[in-house]
View 1 (cartoon, rainbow, N blue to C red):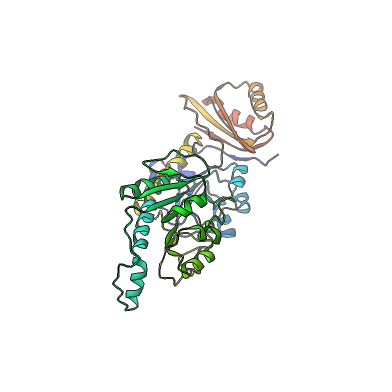
View 2: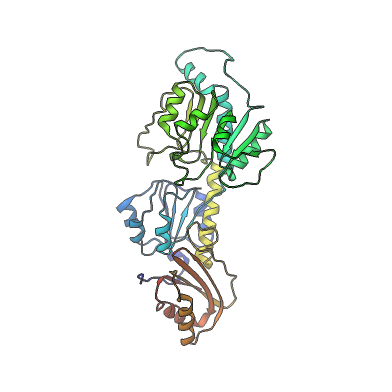
Length: 413
């Protein structure tokens, strides 16, 4: 049986919140407004033993992309009950390990879509006009005034790989500039505007003047764009990657750019990125004039960071206040309306036959009435939220502790 890690209900000011990596102040403001005043903020990421040590008495953790929550670290965080990733991705968290420890993980999948789409739009215009190359020439005191190989985006074909929230919004913005939009996705998508879905990646690559990548990091998308795919692109096309660093073979891209096959490229994400601003950046793309390199800032606008801070903080508050796990990326999604005069018990357990029967049995034997109950499971974990009479919550919590397979229990007053 998994060792019980019980967190009893107590005043919100005793729930410790740790926010790392300079998360926007809107998150702290949101948490304080809801009574979470025991809050520590840091501008840096923590790793390994330093992170595990910091988490010894932390109940809620907020991170961005650099802090790595491994299984080893999670097992050393006995009080941790929720994690907020103040960004779109959650690759920095071992999600299955967090779920097994009874820790839901929340993120902000939509809050910075506009920021990313705007950056990509700007980059495609600059690259078609050869602005990065002209700028570098000027820095070397070279005056190359010419319209050769400089184009408007109007009438050009934008190929979007991955037609999710960012890809779809980019397509709408591109159409407003007079572009044709084609997209490829592994599932059938409802198109926006006049965009058309193509049947294969290579079909898209052969048609697009600009290829923009907006796919998640999965085993299927690793090295999605290799030398073979780059060779399939139109001569003089542009490649933009603002999705994940392992999607593009950077060495192959550098070779194609130096050979003149592509007009240019814009890369915001890399296979290996510095863990802090103090570490040096290295890439085969450095020194190529027709390449725009940005340090993973696609979603880094003040507007986006403020929205992300509010969105993720609200999700953490809802989970802490009433047990709602809706929109968690790794956890059973449960939401139960509150019942006046009742206390709420949360029970996270191993997903195995007989747990619910055992819960109901121990409550019956204890003479406890359940006013409302809701169960959801996900893979190896089950999550039950139940409301009982406020006078009996401590007895109910004691009864839950006897259920085999219990991972975490909590009572909310």
